[in-house]
Structure formats: C-alpha cells, structure tokens
Amino acid sequence: MATPTLIKLLSKLPKAKSEIHTYSESRSKSQAAGAAHQWALKIPFKRHLLHIHMQKPVNMSTGAAAVSTVSAASCGLGKQQRRRLAAFDFDHTIVSQNTDTVVRDMLPNELISSKALTDLMESECWTEYMAEIFRLLHAQQVQESRIRDVIRCIPEVPGFVRLIKHLQKRLNFDLIIISDSNSVFIDEWLRAHNLSDCFKAIFTNPAHFDEHGQLQVRPHHQQTDCKLSASNLCKGRVLEHFVIEQDLRFNIRYDHVFYVGDGNNDICPVLRQRACDFACARQGFAMERHLIKNRNKLKLRAQLLIWRNGFDLLEQMCALPQLQGQSIESHPLETEIGRRASAAAPAASPAPPEQ
Image 1 (cartoon, rainbow, N blue to C red):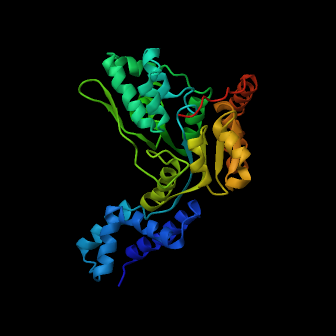
Image 2: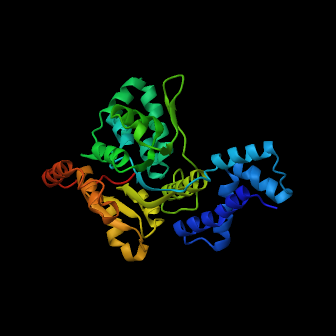
Image 3: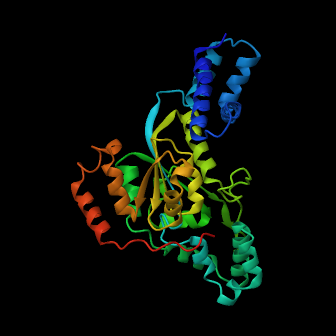
C-alpha cells in the first residue's frame, strides 16, 4: 500500500506531463508522458521511492519514516511556491556586442579573413569555428589576462544592469541566462558588474583555460531535433527542461515566464511559451523582425514586448497588470528616470548577420 508521501510523489507525474504538454504541444501524449516519467527518474530520491513503491510494500518503521521525510523534503514536496522567471540571452541582449566576435577581432585581419576560417564559418558549425579562433589566439601569444580584460570592458546594453538587479531584488524574479557564448566570457562579465549572485542558473557552452593558457570550449549539448537551433544548443529545450525541473525538484511553479533576446536562435524558446508568458524581442534585431513577419504562421502564444534598452523593458514590465503594485507605484522616481532614458536613447542599430 502506498504511503502518503509516495502518493504525493506519484501525483507529481501527471502534473509534469501536463507541464511538458503545455510547453511542447507538438509532441504526442505518449511522448509527453514518457518525458514526464524520465524527468522523475532523473531525481535520485524520487527514483528510489518509485522503485520501492513498484517492487514491494513499504514497512514504515521509525528509521524508514525518517528516511522518507528527508527524501520528501529533498524532492520539494512542501508548500508550492508561485514565482516568475526571466530568461535572458547574453550577446546583444545583456551586453552590447557579440563576445565571440569581440575576442576574434584580437587577431590580425589577414588571419580572420583567411580561407580556412571563412570555410569553417560557412560550415555553420560556430563552436568549431571559435575553437580554431582560440587556437590561433594562443598561437599569437594572446594571454588569458588580455582576453578577460576585453570581455570585462564590453559595455552593457543601456539599463540592463539596473533591470537585472530590479527584477531579482525588488520583484523577486528568478533569473537565468541561456546563451551560445561560453561560461568563461559570461562569468567574467557578470563578476565585473557585480551580477553573479543575481542568476539562479547559466546555460551555455562550458569553457576553461587549459594548462597552456588556451581557451577550450565544449558544446552545451548535441541535438538534431530542433531545426530552429544550432546543433550545440537548443534554447527552447533548455528553458522547457528548467521550468519542469524547478516544479519537480523544488515545487516552484512559474506564473509568468519572460524570455528576453535578440536573435534568430531566440525564436525556439518563445514558440514553446504559454499564453501567460512574454516574448521580449529587441527592436531592430532578427528576433523582432522574424516574429512580426511570421507571427500568424509561427502561432506565437506568448505576449510580445518590443524593447530598445533595459530602461524601456523595465518600464514595460512594471506597467503590466500582472506586475502592478510592486514597482511603479513604489518607486516613481526610478520609473521616471527610466522613462527619460528611454526617450533620450537612440533606436538600436540592426544586429550584424547571425553567426
């Protein structure tokens, strides 16, 4: 006979199936159910309790009860938390340039325009292209300290440091980054701007400087299912899995998910959003152009916000009925500063072609 803890645990699986189906309606019901089951089995305590439940009755002795209590707490079976999530791209969204091309431009022009590099770039395997860039930088004796300095000096998109701090500290958002940059560049920039503690998770290509001082980068994952994404990173899959895992592990449900981006590789995650979510596209960049041109064809369910800078986006978010009573009324001076900055800022120039 199942214990109350096990009943609560097993009741999570239909909930997971529902969440997966909401975020990926193109999947069949059997696939969605299978995905929900796989998510539960990935969590060690849940896998253990499910195994016990399916194999034999549980004798709830004092010791077993204590283990079950710890397991239930670890699985997030306490009171459900209702929160909001903001997921950010990094290049041309938080920072005003592409971190990869900024570092690439440390090479001599004749190397950048060489046939070998051009062929690699045209092969549409950006991670391999950048691996060769990092090899050439090492061969040119460009030191790790110089690369880190260049990254730290990339300016923010105006207002984004304030936006991030405001969402995390005043509006109690959970924040994550999903980026095709790499962990060294993102961590370096966030530390330089005192933002490291603002993010719950960062999903990007893992990177490190090896013992010889050469930057090594690995793909975040390998995928062939999503045609809207590169083989090394499907942002939609990452966002979908994060939301489901927060529910299963920590009992956190996101009432609204804001996805903030600029490029074509930001299309996939917003197409998986719900009607209660928000797709936030940078004005004048590929994401905005693509969504507006193909909005009906793409069947975008999320509400679309077009932003020019961080001040503008913060003001739009705080004006939403879903967030009313938490920022604008409480902080009128900051809102007025943001409004003036938005009015004074020039429209964003179009992004360079996507790499």
